[in-house]
Amino acid sequence: MAANTWKPSEDDVRQAYVYLLGRFLVIRQETIDRAADGFAYNRITYNPLGSADFVNPNFDVAYLEAWFAVDDATAVLLDVPEITGRYYTAQVLDEWGEVVFNINDRTTPSKPYGTFALVKPGTAPPIPDGATRVELHSAKAKMLARIELRGDPDGAIALQHGFTATPLGEPEVAEPPAIPHFDNATLLGADIFDNLDAVLASAADVSPAAYRMQVLARSIADHLAENPDERARFDTYLRSTFVPEFREFSLTKSAPYVNRWVGGKPTGNYGADYTTRTVVDLHGIWANTSEEVVYFVASRGVDGALLDGGKNHVLHFPADDLPDSVSPSPSRSAATYRRASSVAAAGAPPALTESP
Image (cartoon, rainbow, N blue to C red; front, side, top):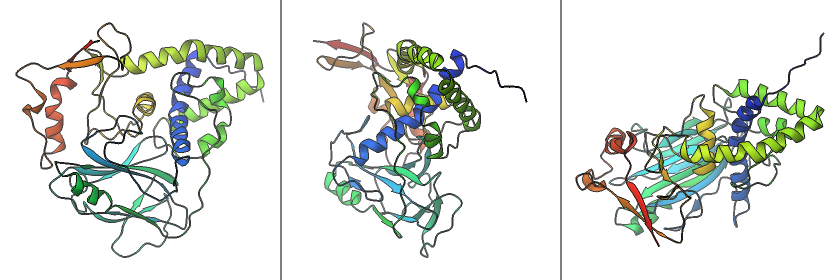
């Protein structure tokens, strides 16, 4: 059999890098969450009102979050209280940042509250009568739930604590794969291709692009391991050229970019668009689906430079198109929210100015 003489191009490395980075960002977040005081899988954290210890929080909701872990023989029961007259959702995501499901009166009107049994895909552990069986994408999942304050913070807190998680046994929980330390400014270089089998085996990817991209990534990893000079060349290229380009792309070109705002693109479920998934994992991890929310992010000031927290920033809306011209309420459908955002989604978000 002839030897395989294939060599990766810069474009091959770029594509595989972006694909892998999404998983690395979720692994990094799981590692950070595990280091928090009192952390345990299948234990809900009821965040204090106004806390902002994660990306892009809203201040008009009470948050709660958890990491779920199941195995072949063990399910976890998620109990959601009955909530009326205010917005809420229990959003569960997989280990690549894809939304598995939302529980609320819009997405699951046949069962907007009650007991849900979370199970590993392809398994049938025993669950109690009355619990609705829900398959995750892999053995772990992240929940981020939100309850609208609606002028009644005490009521929101009471409902927040009505969410409970109960493992039906003691599931075996795998440690997250070992990855190099990195931050959003530096990201990674060729070391993203190290320990690749463990990273890819740690969580199934539902993206239609997964097979193609994982074969490509493994081929690159093998090539770099066998060719130290190539590894050094691609490491320099990634760190000095591609990472800065990708960061710029993510903030200005990854979605419609108008008035120095980027956003309006569908999130939460990405199909084969792993690039958008990675951008979201980088700048707004745990983004929900577009049926729930439309995201816009401003990162630049009037001069095109990154926003400066030492200055005041002012939004300018047309007098006849103020944000409160369509008042959201729990009874409004997701389509109504999207219509309310249609002007911005079409390319006219508010102008942004700054002052000392």
